[in-house]
Length: 321
Image 1 (cartoon, one colour):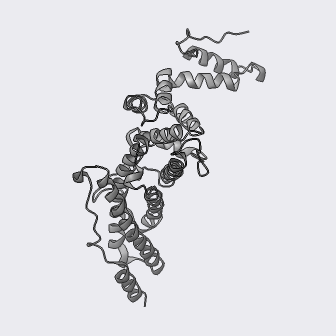
Image 2 (cartoon, one colour):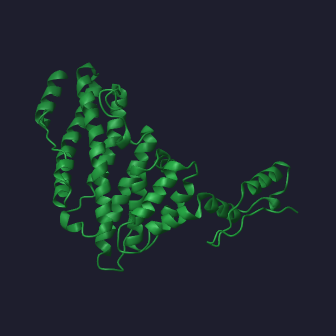
Image 3 (cartoon, helix red, strand yellow):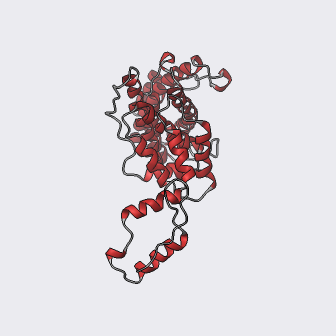
């Protein structure tokens, strides 16, 4: 027989597995020990929790309590520090937050989503990279909490919010980067793409942008700290996402006269959708202004620099004659 070495109890009732224990197990497996001698899945789960660290588990659970308030900044700061300053796996953290979204309480679910979004925005890229590698992220399209008065209304926003986070994660998988964090300017990602890359990437941005704008909250619906925290994260994403979107469109227009007919037609479709989304973004930013976001942080959105839909369509028809 052999012993699995463990540290003393860490005070949380969960033993911390030492590196020696892991090495010993791996050596025994390589030496041909039978299946019966290998560590059980439940034992491995304990190792994963210990590997993540009890302080991080506490922070994740603390950020997603059923208290009627936004996730506490101190818990979010602890999670950000864990992601940014360690080389530990983020899988355990993602699992804890994912499990929290299976709660029947809209408060717990919404706070878990806000926490995930906060880590996407402010955390190391490896967090969203891990989320993008999962087969599925959030399946909350049927979520409904009828246990409290505000439950049905908040459940609607939870469904919309989770869809956005799913699209944000999927976009990362499709283009191998978080478009809200890519380099801007003439030598940035969107300005240096060729025509084929633009025609592949801009529709991905459009879908993510649609999901964001579909959150569609009015000022009088942002009535508690949880939904307000979600809106603030969406506001930040909207500015970064639109900046990349706008640069991509400028690049696309600059290449228009060198495109093939099929590319011109695809570009026109992308451009017309861009105009529609610019109008919707202006409405979204109007809500941001009404809920107290400093006007100096809200850009003025105008379509004056771009041709309108009829002119763009007429130009294309002339070119394709």
